Structures are given as structure tokens and as C-alpha cells.
Length: 294
Image (cartoon, rainbow, N blue to C red; front, side, top):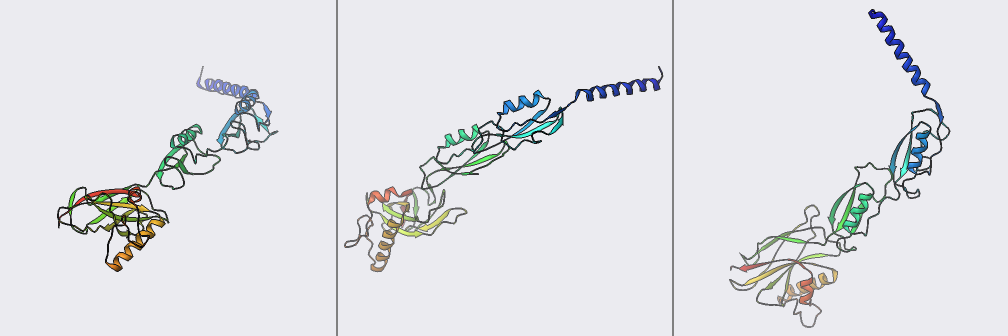
């Protein structure tokens, strides 16, 4: 058989195959699949020779795993050749709301929604420790499977004193530097307070520190130590509310004016300028012991 006849046979065979494929295709009418379950919709489409191309979206009104009405394309009644695709949206139910849940509960709920999560620890004084106080986004509709929900978990404020170090020798006015894990609220103030270690109850507030720079949350101030060389002191960092801050400020201003410095825990006679040792301790978030070297 020469080459031309071989080529002719090949062309005839391809034509026959093409004609056979065309003969197998038929025109079908797209059915209504809205409100069906995903499985039912797939079965119905496959039964008449169409294929399903569905995507998942969250819906506050449509039952989970049901086709969202009006989402199918092409619409009901459209004529298609068999083998073509019909797209639609499958409801995944409500977008998960994890605010108020524990960290583990929130992660489980996000996982069940086939989403990723990112845990962010921050401070919120209206929620208990360990609870989620915010999420981003709050609501959503159609999300990819690799979408990440940010979960903000409440953690209490912590303070790190970076300087001076524990049990080092210091002068009478050592610089105290440190950082906070989160910003103070509008009603909170940061104070340095000092207590001689040979005294179990007397505290002296020092200077009221300014509000922290939001970027790095660092603070710096001085502690003033009165005593003899070799005396040991505890330097505490306090976070107080408006009432205690006001009492501290009144005590400090009166002490400066009268040059008289009773401890705040003993109080100033004839005034309300007194704060109990237990209250001081409750508001102390960090401390360091030092030794006076002069």
C-alpha cells in the first residue's frame, strides 16, 4: 500500500471517530438544582450527561451543603450539549463566629469550616483570659480553602524589666527600663514604686511614667532610693486605674510641696493619701531587687 492510500485510510478513520463522537452527544435541558443537596444535584446532572462544577460559600440562610438558589449557571431550561459543565454555589452554612470561645474551641470551629487560622495574642480587659475577643473577618461568603481567619485571644498584660538587672549594685537614682506586652488602656497609668527589703509593708511611689509609644511599648523612668550603702530595695512596676493614680498624684504633689515623704502604705495623716500594701502588690506586674552602692 502506497503512502497516499495509507493517509486516506487514516483520514477516513478519524472522520468516522469524529462522527461517532458527535453522534453520542445530545442536547439536554439544564434542570433546576437550587435548594437541592450537593449530592442530589451532582446525581441529577450526571444522569442527563452534564458535569458539576461547584464552589463552597458561607450562607446565613441556606442549609449547609445545599445549592444556593439562583447561583447555578447556566440557568434552568438552558439547552446544552451533553458533557458540558453546570456551575453553582454550595452553602457551607454560617460563617463561624468564634468571639467569646476559648482558643481551642475557636480553632476547632475554624477547622470544621475547612479554613485556616492565625492566633494573635493581645489584651482586652472586657474578656476573660484565654477567650477570643475579636476575629477577622467577622463575616464572609465565598472563601478559598487556604483562607486564614485571624483569631485574637486575650492575654493579660505582662511587663519585662530590662534594666537594672536582678541584685546588681545601683546608685541612688537608677534608671528603670522595660517593655509591656500590650498598650495601656486610656484609664490606666504606669508607676515605679520602691520598697526597702528590710521593711515588709512600706511602699513609695516614684514618678508617673508617660503613656507608652505604641510601636515598641517601651518605658523608662527613675527609681529614687534613700538609705545607706548596702541597703537592698525592691523596685516594682505598677499598672493602676484612675482612682489609685489620683491618690498617687496627690501624695506625690503634697510630698514635693511639704518635702515630707511618708510611705503611701502608711498614708499621710489627715488626708486620704493612702493605699494598702495588698493593693500595691495586686497592681505590681514586675519587680527587681537591687543593692544601693552609695
